[in-house]
Length: 361
Image 1 (cartoon, rainbow, N blue to C red):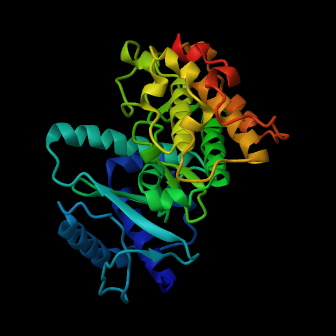
Image 2 (cartoon, rainbow, N blue to C red):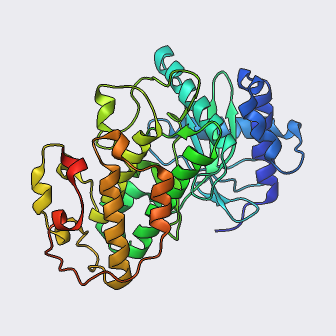
Image 3 (cartoon, rainbow, N blue to C red):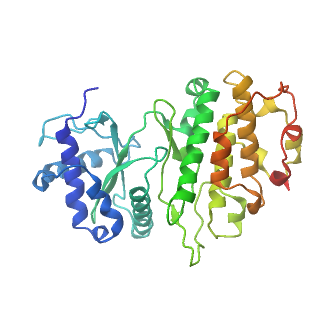
């Protein structure tokens, strides 16, 4: 794959700059990400790029194809052909939405679009997907963010071949990366940001399995002096149980979802009934029953780390919201170096390893 000429990057950013400055979004502070782009760009170069972009987007409508773009011609001939790199050899993708939507869907989509822009222009973390820019007009809108070759954690775990190459060390590091990102959002951002849809489909991986939290369309900025009640957002099977009857958002909702994702990492599949409030038999499950059998059982230091990760995951899944740890406690716990654990048998019951009362009571 040949590197993308720097002229392409300038053209894309020129397009983004022109279309956003004339749109109502430009009146809001969260479009200041424009000023973070390096260099000054010629606005007059954008018209041909707009036409090529919309033609390419229209050709993809209804095909269900990955919305990945590349510039493989000299400007202004504009040929969109798939995937390509920017001037720093990073792959860039275009995520487009909002094409000919009905009024009700359009309103909902615009809210999510603006929420994602606001969140991603105000946060910077190595484990959060990078927003390169965006375009918003009355007819067409899209986000430009980094493309991650590893795809989503959900897709990786569902493919037996790729999951077999996804070892315990890499899974441990993914858990740490996601925890660090959520810790940053909850404790280092002002106001704190609640993701509200932490799930394996929204965790993207690069070629070295470095995790990035993505999809901030439902993210919520916490308001310390006002109500944080809202409508339901999240993914079934990952959302905290209290959201079934209480729509007040706080960081412990993300903590619960993180616990589900962490168990999914260890098990290689969604934990399902393991996190059921009525499943007392979880006490009697053996350790080997929840380890992904597509990779060899862990040993020594990695086994020590995994037992610690499982312990933290179960604490995150407590049905008592106040019993869940903060993401700062989770991040610190996952970063602590472990000495070798006793030579536990893989037949040991989970109830003997962990205090699971908060999970099933």
